[in-house]
Length: 315
Length: 250
Image (cartoon, rainbow over all chains, first blue to last red; front, side):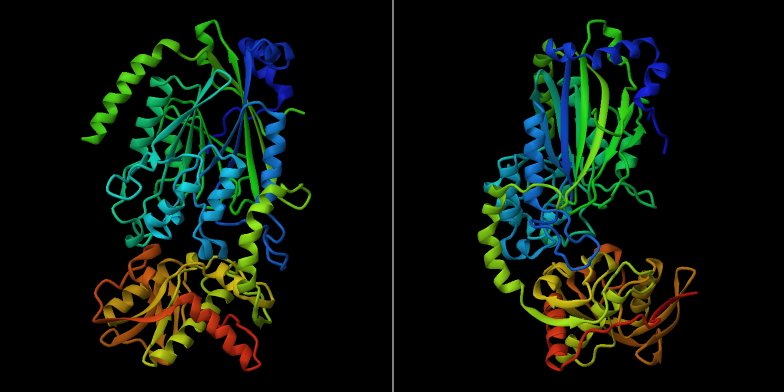
């Protein structure tokens, strides 16, 4: 996969050209934040948490001692205390994997996500494990929306429970977030997904992302995807999605439980960057992506992609 | 119809919104990943929320029902795994107590095995994590040609958890097949144990769509595993599954 402009900060001014150099200077200036010319947005994300309420038990298994909702919540609180503009997102498969789900049906998982202040999630295949009704039953415990653009749920109990996208406003920035789900046939027992209709994710992604970027003029478009990171065959994955779409800045992925060393930056149909990230499963990791935006006067600057990418935070 | 309405709604909203368009350009992105481990503080309000649930669950789940002398892992190299062998043997053994005519079993796929069990004590909880799904065991009487389809799926997917069958995978196809201790005969019917999930084509399985007969045993796959471990323990035995070459790669 083609890597786009992954350079460290020291090299940036040299390779970035004059326009970027000007930007780089203002990024480093506190004045730019103070006068509102620079805005920072922090995205925090999880996927496939799979009912992992407590850390993995200390039993010698591979992931022993890792994860845990109480630690994740404390970390999220700490980051929220440090950052003004935070979005906390999840890419589905909240349910299934520990006896908490078998015994309580997902009620606790959803309650804890609400308590942690999740801003949105999408539907994973395992979220159907107690049927459409099983998911519907837990929704009263959710204070965040379920975003899904490529399932037609109109003939199911969830017909009024999901939405294709939501636009979040943070410090003058507009962030469009939408969700995509995997084909359920062959993956989920038909009696569990019932009348749910799967729609082509590439088509729905292009349609939805265009509405968000070009229609609503979102500054950033994020896709919560439960399609899976990549496959050996040609099945639709986040890599396939990124290459075949426009207007998506970030795909927060799930399903394949992929641990990625760093997020992957893919060239999309417009030759722009679509970043894919996924953080394993079971809440072992919390992903973070900070975006910096600069107010522009000269209209040309708007098209100044690619932007600077660092695989670490500013110290 | 509904979509057309929605699209119209979008168009109207877009027209209204485009007046206050964005004035920001994305200039930089920094990334970080946090490992959630014991170096982090805990949020006690979260613990307070889950504690009552945990207490109720622990009563049931922390019972030790048996022991394993080996780590039951599915991460060993396919075509077979220690955990896959244990899983398939256990379910076949328990199902045969209900119907002794079963010839062989594919009670799960590798994808259906959700967690390893470390060497030592086995609790109810560990079996739930290994097999969280509520799948039922089902037996199918299949024509030899449909059995071959099942075996082809097993071979083409690089091996799946099985019991009562021995075969080689040659160029993604099954070869030198034995059902029990007899060579496979495509002209014979066989009784195959599986789960309702696999039988409906889960994880891409094939061969179960045209059964001669079908019977739900009334035994959940997870309950079969729990029973097997409890029975071993009652007889003073521990789990000690090994790789035995039931599926080999040429």
